[in-house]
Image (cartoon, rainbow, N blue to C red; front, side, top):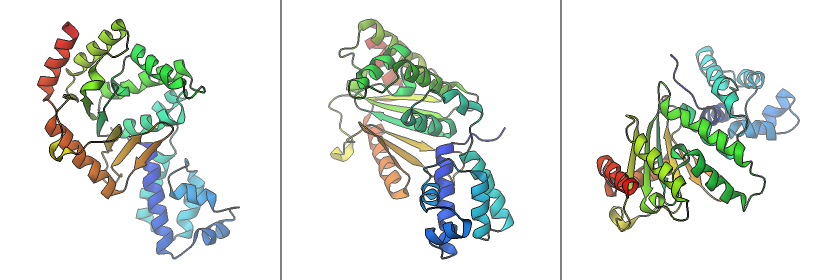
Length: 286
């Protein structure tokens, strides 16, 4: 069975490869677009930045301009097809907004995922009722949100944890994320029960960071974030920073490595998986 791939990461990798090939040929964006008869450089710029789903015919034209050898050409065509995919699981995500779709694409091809959440339960671990409360709250500042569509889409994303070849998933949760707050008791107990049940999956690890436990050196993450690695080591490891209006994707190795070091410090300070399961069980029983 072929390894799963993440279209959003394949687009980033394809863009980086094409940009490098263009520079090797000492061509500007304008020169390439002139040779191909493209109206402006924006199309090529978006391809190189991984911001658009590439058309295979356009990629083949670029490979001709860059005089790519047969072996390299075949490899890039495979990447281009992965980057442009709209079949299989992708069709099931049609209801998703753009932000949630990006996370779904990353999750679908990931070999490992690490989530840090200081306030709420991460999306991959949420029940439908808990997700609905979070999405409804978000609608107070963005009235365009389709609440029920986003809930259904989030539940589809959950399938990645139980597929035949699931990613290794680790959630590091600050204690505040595991407190009921203003969540209705029934909804919160259902959410706690899901967390406890998920700790029984071999590929899922949940770690609780108790209030007052500070990572070594006192470094504290300022925002929720997720780290992704992929089966193909040539696909760039990625960090997603969650913000109010948009999310930031980091692929530069220096940026990713900093977040990986931060994750290591968080894990060193957190309860063990066994201690976390016990703590969640106590909360559920109370």
